[in-house]
Image (cartoon, rainbow, N blue to C red; front, side):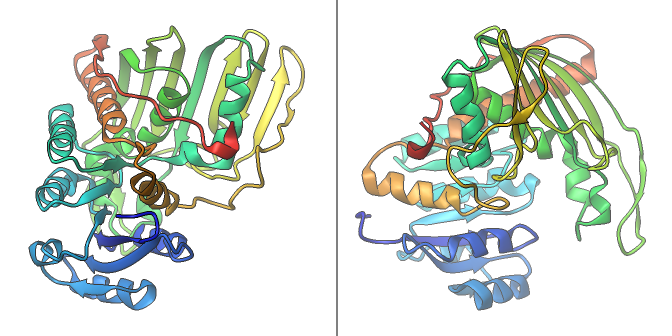
Length: 358
């Protein structure tokens, strides 16, 4: 694909998040949605009516189209491995929603397959490409905090059943695997790979009901707290919860250094508040590196993929970093289950800051 041609995208999975991607991809001439597939074809029909492309009722047939350059995989967590593998074997680049897979063995297999086939494998989260997140990263790189030794990561994501039309898959994987990936990706981008974890988890609130009143039982930990040691010596505490929600006062990420601290109000929103405080002094807003996008520009991941292919350079969100995060999640889960520290061994090439974030 030349730099002049758009990246032709097949969207696989047209559920709750698909609209956010469709809306934020639509303004970019470098991207073109050529099709969509969903196990419920009516959802693919609705998506294509709004954002363009041809709806498909058969994934194999959709992947056979020579028009498709890349797949945007928005299927449920449990389907990621099989869908990504099928797409890579069909010769398509892939950007997938998180997590890349539900165990490290499968995540590594997907990375190896992409390398073998000389295809791009990109994965969420990519929220470190947001303006607020780049602002924090620049402050750290510029030494404004001094040596950062401690990070607190709080993800109180609340009771998913109250807003999501299909909450059970989220509870099947648990808050750790669904939203813990965000701060883990941020801290491994800013600092270094994780090398050791120790964790505890619990099902706090097992009996739940969907918005329609259908009862279901939670068996995967809906609350997890983990301590992590990174390769550069940074220590982090990660808390994830599908019990406490946005009314909880512990939010976002705190970065504490020898000279100062920075608070990032959200792991996700590109316009999240960013505040800076010297030791024992009050916090004050830290100016953004540029005016932020209001919310999350999900399509920024696909813009990055298109530009990286056109410029013949590595894309920032990589399968290898996503696989490392999967190994960390697996290690935390093992520590919760077995009550012991667990080592993490995988490596990845870290992404570079955005040109406007340097």
